[in-house]
Length: 250
Image (tube, rainbow, N blue to C red; front, side):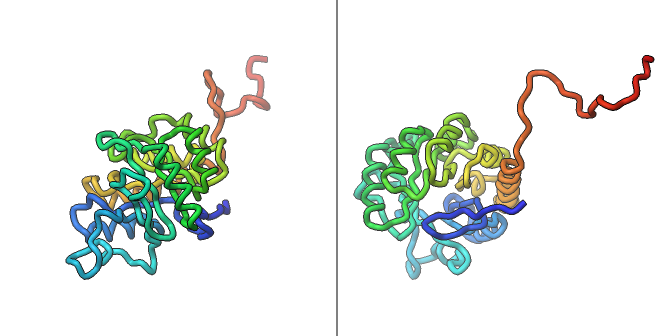
């Protein structure tokens, strides 16, 4: 079954899994996990990374010829703080405890950066109205949370995600809340265009193995979505048709 690529900012990506760089036990394990994930886009928090030449940097462990770096404004609490790079994962956080987005600040930053020519990928809540406003503001995609960042709770409100998919025309990438492979598969089965995750891989007992599991889950979920699931029914339906069988009662 031939599939289309994920298109962001005019660039084509065959992988629909985006991975992060934080919380790994070592940079070498991070490098191996990136390889196993099959991802082509890697997020880097711009406020938390050492630049090359300033001691060991995670950038020394990322093959920039292979991976597209996605600067992530994690840690930003105002629109003025958020912005770097042609393609940017935009986070404007409204609360330090929940890490939920500041919707007003997010919309302002999206408008500003999009107007200046940036490919803006905003992390947002799972509100269809906000998603539509972000699209109207110039976002290249919308990235609704599945659950709070780092919580591992999975997709808490699949119905909102489904409504977002029906509301916007830009790609929808679930960002935050994934805990295990089944969560990623569910996001893709809903019809999402991709999944972004960090803690679910970096925090796993075996991060490299989990990265591979996530790769397979995203691929399987996407294939299942495109294959088209059967409808849900209250009662059983025989797996083997009865039509055409001999009538042994006569």
